[in-house]
Image 1: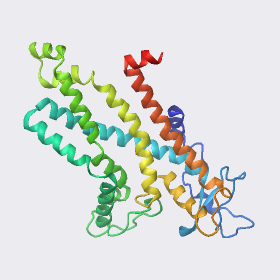
Image 2: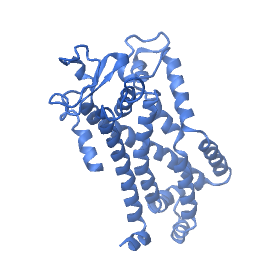
Image 3: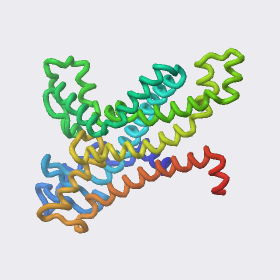
Length: 308
């Protein structure tokens, strides 16, 4: 499934009628001339449409799902890798240096572990809002056409495309990697082969990269694969509640809510507005978790032998 999702993300622009999931807005329907209803699947829209009432546009579900794979893959992989890199460096530095460096960095890690991720996301969101002098919500549908006076033109595009969820994850989700790396490195430093290398004159950098890290990398890889799916689910969740809007899947579920609950809402009458997106989210998250479980079994000789 992971390989399939990667292929879909790479070929997204080739297998969709448009790179914009709102292309269905230009279509007309005989019984809905103003395009105010969500339309069931047909020959033009294979998985139907979702009417975004507040912006008076139509979302093509198929296009949103396929483009969402590209967004999800880029978001999840980049966030997980960068988070793992930061955490690994912090944990390794603390363990290799020891002393007060280890105490300070690990106490900082423990303190940040108590900070809820949603607080970090809201903090970044508000900082972006303050910088641009407006709202950073629903970035998919709004671009700043003029640069605020206090933001240089060459930095405006950076502000426009900053994803507060991605930034918050990178800044506030590296602590488990730091804690795990610190434990693994402290354990590795006491191994006989490390002591032998140190006696032969190896320095700390050489010991870490040539001996300790290669023998400690497997648990970190398992955590990275599981975090990819988890981060994408977080992205969709926060987009659904209106904090940032970089996830097409979260955006579609947000608009689908209007057709499920409230006056005239029905769960099964308009199944296409939420079931395809929900199934894709479940499969995406499950596939990375299953990959992580498989890597865990593969890297653990005793567990793998027991399973055989």
